[in-house]
Image 1 (cartoon, rainbow, N blue to C red):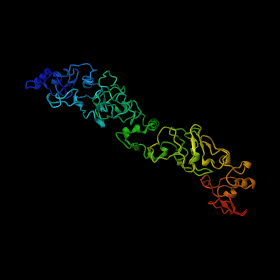
Image 2: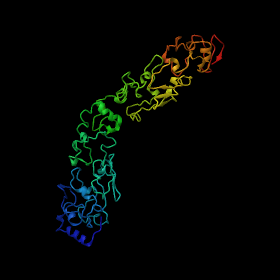
Image 3: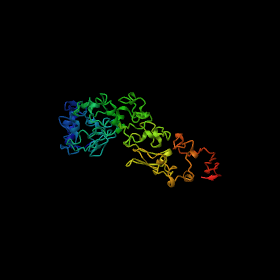
Image 4: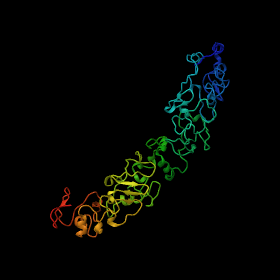
Length: 458
């Protein structure tokens, strides 16, 4: 481990003769605590002091903590008021005898051989010669710590403050609560004082007390925490929230993952579409509410539209991309494929459902938080538009020039007073030709041969 002078060597030999071996005690006293490392002979003969075997002094007589041979030895070995006692064996192989192989027969610096304590919870500790990194004791398996790779020779207390090893609270897999005592009351009190040093940095997570403060069971209290970051609940409730050290969410919320109305909707209908929103809003002037109801409910002019027309519908509440910061993503599909939505103006554009491609007077756009007005012409031209009739094919010739009604060719959809008679055939992605005349419509070549004229192409 290191080289020593002849004087040091003779002293060591004296300590290991029959007359001196009893000086090697079975325990080394650190503060008021026996730590079970090498005995008093270590501190009496080569390094350390009468208090314990860890420097200062170093084997070469150094005592300043800025010296690597001294560093934070005492900060680790002294009995602590806030963490479990550290032993020499946590970082070094402690010899039974001074002359054991690997002790004084190798050159300085002393070898580091991290113990199970430093590797707890899967940590992979490493020593660079200046800093420790990947060490369980310094938060390698936690998150949010500001000093997880401490400098060995910096012993001013700045690397040992709350928050150095883990966030307050940890930033991943943890609740957003900053009241540590709520879950870890056996370890820390409400003032953030460690009350059981032997349970802090001991390789285990000591959680108790139900995990939450009084009143947390209210959905209005714990719901926002969940929506902010569902993974913050997994540390206690399991990776899929079916139970860990804490209860399964199913205990109180049976079937919640596939019940859309558990988080939103359920006010106007059972589809899960707002109102209400995940934060409890119901006014249609709120974009999160808007005109959801008029879309997902069957109306006088169209059948009910499914949620998938405008959103990606998850298999479960925990499906990737589902619970994330507002607003909800709009991903048009089906009849609305190719459409777009502006979050700045709350407007849908280029939408088939609102007349795009049919020379709509509204340009295929609709205000999400507004009300749709204008009758038939809100989405497409009709026979009242005169010279402005711009619908496809021969619409103008029939409805304007010949004064025919929409029902002449679409009477299974609309009647002579322009009332929709079968909403399932309106805004359905098809052209339902079903007039009162025998039209003989051919959808393939778009031709008809009604009694009023010979065969013509539309």
